[in-house]
Length: 247
Ligand SMILES: Nc1ncnc2c1ncn2[C@@H]1O[C@H](COP(=O)(O)OP(=O)(O)OP(=O)(O)O)[C@@H](O)[C@H]1O
Image (cartoon, rainbow, N blue to C red; front, side, top):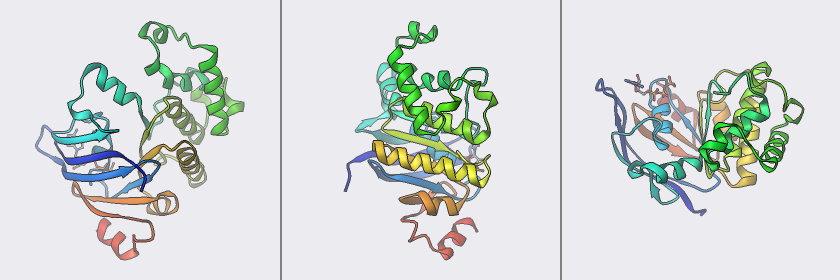
């Protein structure tokens, strides 16, 4: 089996108002896997995903990314771990008035000095790499358009390109296709899968659509009431199990 890239131990999240977001999550995820997290609304999918890079601060437990516990990391060490974790959002989170290629270059910021990054001084090499990445998501002809002028599906592909520019080991995608039509969703999931496999990136995707999880994931984790209640291959997720999960 491929090396473990992510190990989660006794991960728990209780929100300040007392709501238990995650009861206790334990799992190991391997290099290059595409994992879909599914489950009913309010199950804890976003809490789970966002706890992995501490976008949402866990209450207790450990998250080892490449052997380092991000929950205990601070300062430079935390930045170094986060640099290797790309994030893709439902609302794309692009700078709409900047060009597509500038948005992709933002993925490189973690590798630049804050002075150069602040002035947007990207090297020719960085720009060339950003254009190459745009080609990989089929957007080379949109590179100099304003990101805000692209369709939703295209904006999400820029989101993928920006995350890839970060040269990540791990990609976290929080409901990346929730706002897209089926055809754009299919494309976004295909690019995530193809690039993940080509580059050996482990990808964890929160999904509402079970059919997309079954079509694209290597492994599906079902979450309900803050706990993992299913963990298996798409084939192992039967109609009965799905019904139990969403009941
Ligand atoms: N900031 C917060 N404060 C209090 N409770 C929260 C907060 N964020 C989420 N929760 C609660 O934590 C639980 C898990 O929420 P989460 O958003 O992780 O679920 P989800 O499975 O991603 O849901 P959805 O599919 O609807 O996005 C829910 O009960 C939710 O109401």
